[in-house]
Amino acid sequence: MNRDPVFLRCSVAVFRTLLLLLPWLAHAGTNEAVDVVHQVREAGEGPVTVIFESGLGDTLEVWRQVQHTIATNCTRTLSYNRAGYPGSDPARTTRDAATIVGELRAELRRRGVPPPYVLVGHSLGGLYMQYFARQYADEVAGLLLVDSTHWNQRLLLGAPTERADGRGRVVLFMDYTARRELNDSTLAGQQVLTSPPARHIPTIVLSSTGVFLGETPARRAEAARLQEEIVGDFPGAEHVRVERSGHYIQKDRPEVVVRAIRKLAGCEK
Image (cartoon, rainbow, N blue to C red; front, top):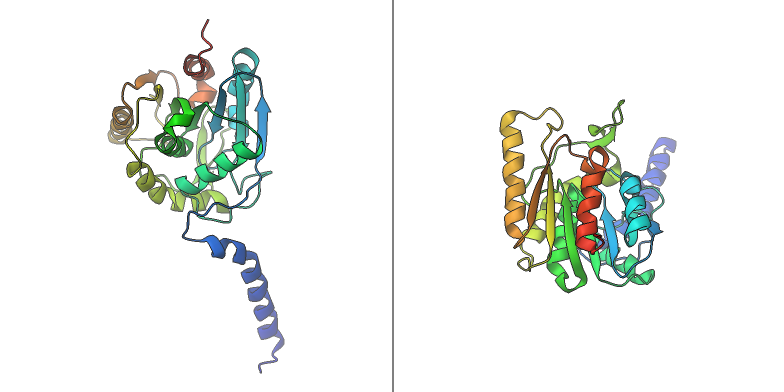
């Protein structure tokens, strides 16, 4: 037996690492739901619950202003941090659409938040909400996609952090959970594409018109084309091109997002 101190220390470190990874390895490559407790913010009352899903690397704080407005003047709301984000349990399984939506639905059941839901998804969160709407259409009263990721869209490497001016985000750093979501985004897109065809769920697609992360004109044109494809996948969807807004429409033009949610939730006066 090798009794070299360096060898023994390395062996102990490897063993401890394996112990930490065992819960994740047990579920890796499966869509088996695990019990995840999320950081959640609930506010407001009403017959419909608006569910907010954030984009890659973002937390529920990205919805604070919009959620407060809807909770005060419209209906019940719920925002949350996915597994692996601050305040939530670690992400122990694949980070594909089926797993993430399964974890969200388990949280809604645990909290006694029944349908109908108005689903609101930004960026990669929009891809997850497309999956939710196509798999569980009977539970969905409306779908709002905020500059949503397309099911066949290649994501940029990186995760967001605030710019000095507070408007929009730039990709600088990526933590472990965000990297896993990025790695599994192709699988998430395949799951959306192979889901049942979208039924006639009232749907609004908000698309930014500003340049994001130094896009070339060709990339901006491609982004616009992908948004049109998303619109075409949901019968009767309304497409709103939001002027004077970057990728974070809920920050640049929160009133547009609030107006769309109020329409889908039936809160228009």
